[in-house]
Length: 225
Image 1 (cartoon, one colour):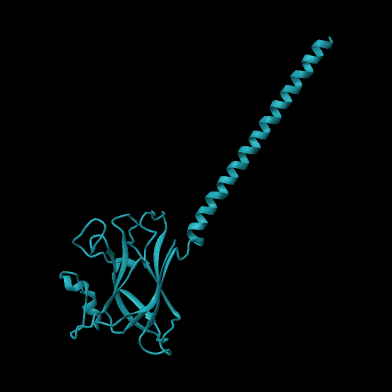
Image 2 (tube, one colour; image 1 turned 120 degrees about the vertical axis):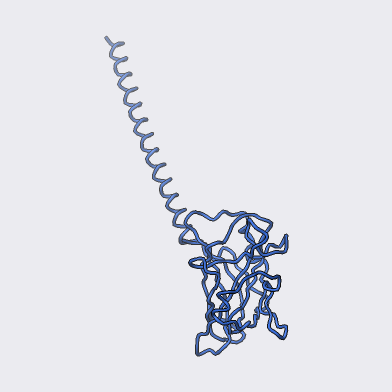
């Protein structure tokens, strides 16, 4: 009888241990699931809240871009049919564009996450006065430094125009004239910012097609929803 009782007690103890282990495993599984959910939520929030100015170029000297002086209608019809269209200049030879190098370093091998968009932040002055906000119109192109051409990732015959809302290539830049400092920032949503590692596009060309001279002090790239 004593042996049978011992076996019975041992069986009960084993069953209780099994139940305890099973409960503990269930508890661990639920905690792992909760931790995974928290991590997924953190990643989602990080993409939309914490990714700011992933790359920023503070220029050693402000970039001065004279205004080409085109009308609204002329800007709307501006194309890149001729090589000279990439390097607009006034009749006296004054060039109305400038290049900002290495503005997108670090992005060439990073895929654009789903739901994320690229924004350009330009630190600017616009010719006029401190008292009033002025505007000028620009085109922005991304330079393929390897082939020395402006074009999309899948074509070498079309200009790589950075497009804004509704795929509009015309970007309105606003600001005041603060002299040798700046206090105005323009944030421009770019809808076709390709993030492919295609021969290292790193240079931004800004064409000042409008009627106000433009100064750029820096360029930042931000990624968010």
